[in-house]
Image (cartoon, rainbow, N blue to C red; front, side, top):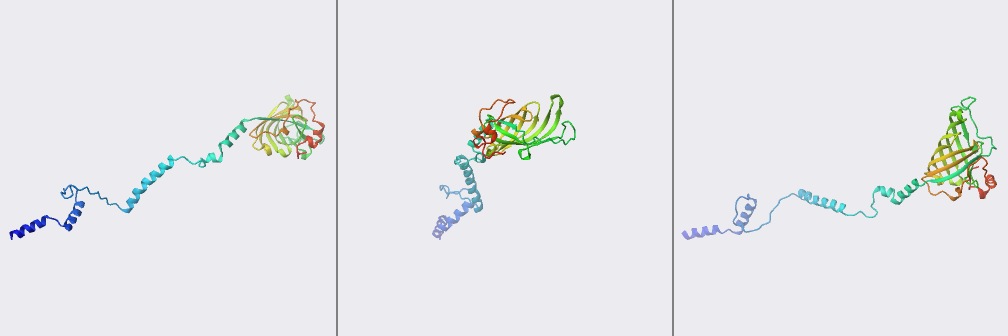
Length: 280
């Protein structure tokens, strides 16, 4: 009986496999403050219970961080330039700066041929003297003949056309001040539009407001010199924002004086002395 009791006690002291597994599961779920001699010498991995949702969240965050880091650390490809550089390439921007900084001079003569009763003077003020509101329209198509010639008087360029509104009569200067809006036509090359104060008794400076053809984007100013009012006027354009002017429009200008006249070929509008499709 005693031997059977000892045998039963020794049998209880030796855990079988099922008991060991039961104890192992109990130990892993028990608080860490209870010592476990069976597992004291074992380096078991720490078990972490996490839901699939938390695993996805934890794995996504490092991926995003790495993605941002790798994105900003990499150099952009050659064609991945900022939007402003794509819209306005550096070369084009430099070209625009050069055009805006470059000033080109263009000299032309405006000569009234005195053959069409021009210019027309409309006295809207109904006064005997020039007064505010009087109009002076001029255009070849309306019956006047203001022909435009190159500065060297060797080439017929076209016409001027527009309107002047009298702003002030200046009797002490024997002249008038007009607000002028008109254009210079250069055949197939296009036209230049100007606006500003036109003084009949001294030099005037008008603003270049734009143009067409080779004068697209033109800005600057034009100096108006009265030679014989209103029959001979000398203009000097100071143009910005356009490519180099055609050689056909250039040439050494003849100094302004009352006796200047265009060459007979230019005055006759011969093909060798006139712009192609010039307005007559």
